[in-house]
Length: 106
Image (tube, rainbow, N blue to C red; front, side, top):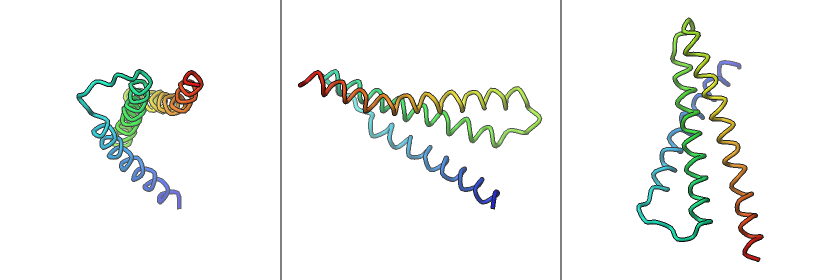
């Protein structure tokens, strides 16, 4: 049962990495926005996709690295933790930013 959960988690991380790449491609535009609130929102979305992609890549490399490379394994664990928390903070900032902009408009 534990082995099935492990492979399921790796599959979800792999699918979310592909979804992050698609999300970043969808947000890629060359036109400049004039609305500052919309620019900030798109920047937060790009940051959350980028941080999560870093998490997925570090997680994948961590699983492929040989276990006796302690220095690299520890660095990858720190990278996954930091990118996880940065993703969480960006996702939390999105509704807070929308709420703040909504309050200013009223």
